[in-house]
Amino acid sequence: MVNIPFAFSQASFTLPNENTSNSGHITLTWEGHGDAAYTLQKSDNSNFEKAEIIYQGPDRASFISGLKNGDYFFRVKTENAPWSGPLLVKVEHHSLQLAFSLAGVGLFVFLSIVYVIILGTRNSAKT
Image (tube, rainbow, N blue to C red; front, side, top):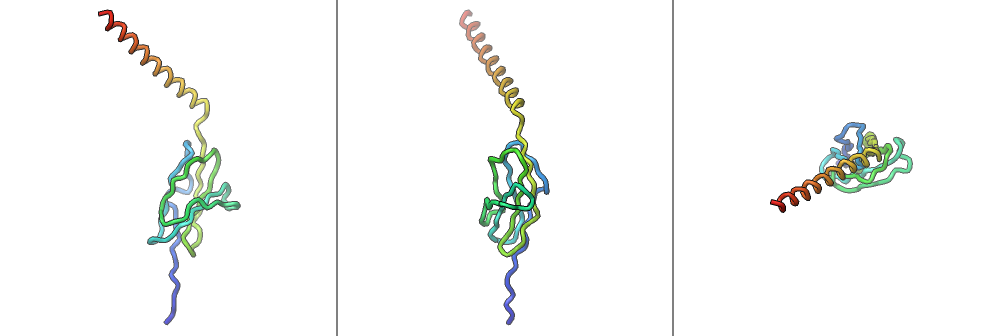
């Protein structure tokens, strides 16, 4: 009887090869085979030098947050299978000028509402 070792199929991402995030977080999903254990790596270059393992286990998705501006490469694999093709995530947060502008608009709206409430309270107290 010939013993043929079980071969795991290669895992692959379900997202496009290039993604962008302006919030510093992304949910990665991948396809695989059965209830295999997966390893997910992150690197700052496509050669995966100094790659960091960020997940190991049976799940087929991972939420990554806290990413700073820059390019990140991810790859996933099952045991005894080759790595998937790299997935590029480009992170570019909103500008500080936009954040302060939106905060200023929010402050203006808040103060306007407070003014209208105070004005309405005074007018109803007079009548």
